[in-house]
Length: 118
Image 1: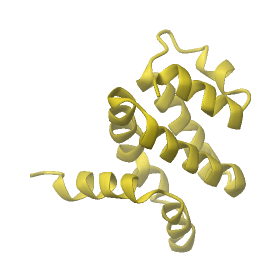
Image 2: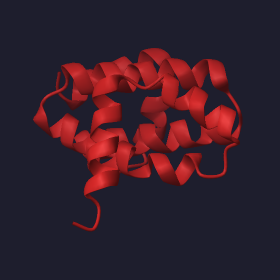
Image 3: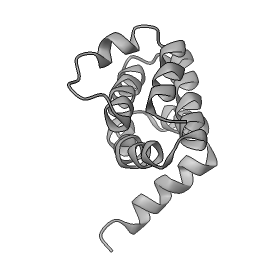
Image 4: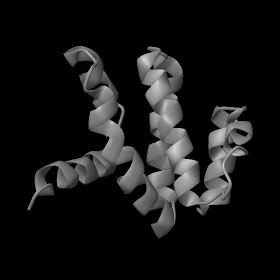
């Protein structure tokens, strides 16, 4: 899957996503994942669990099926931001969010957290 296919997948879930992305100068893997990550962050803040959990599943699918550039974009944008936008969630909500993330993404998250500063 390339970024155009990922964009199509996300737009099926979030119909106005493509309009939001149109504000970006260069559309590429990083801009698609950055915009989707921002959208997920807002879902967490607004407690929009239903769409949030489907979006996390979509992020997992994109990570699993995506090309190397998409995987890098997810690791460097979404995974990197995960702590930041779950930091102010209560413990149960944070656990629930992480329970909807695939083991592949959790492993990537663990690698980033535990290798930081080495």
